[in-house]
Image (cartoon, rainbow, N blue to C red; front, side):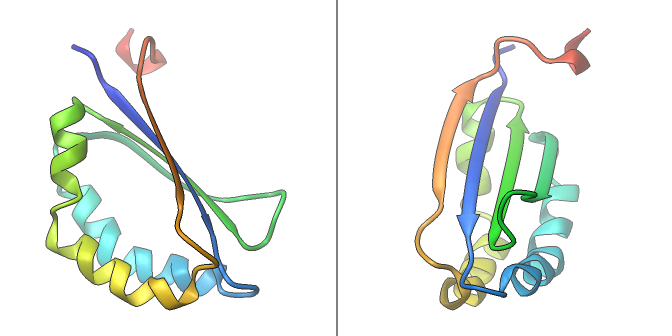
Length: 103
């Protein structure tokens, strides 16, 4: 099975990272926890910049990654955080060639 990784970098407006994280926990954490297509999900507070969030998601396949964008909580989350972000996120995806959890 070819799993898919999605790497996301969000830059918030100065001092807004904690607020964005709280909004994420309210709307997205439950959606992620209930999504069987998410094999791994890491939401990171960047060490190098107090206004940067680094997210890694591993999905069971590309369709699961695309389907999650249609989750109703995602639209609510985006509407609430848009005014707190410095710009659009940088999003990259990759076919995962190897993962320790696959052993």
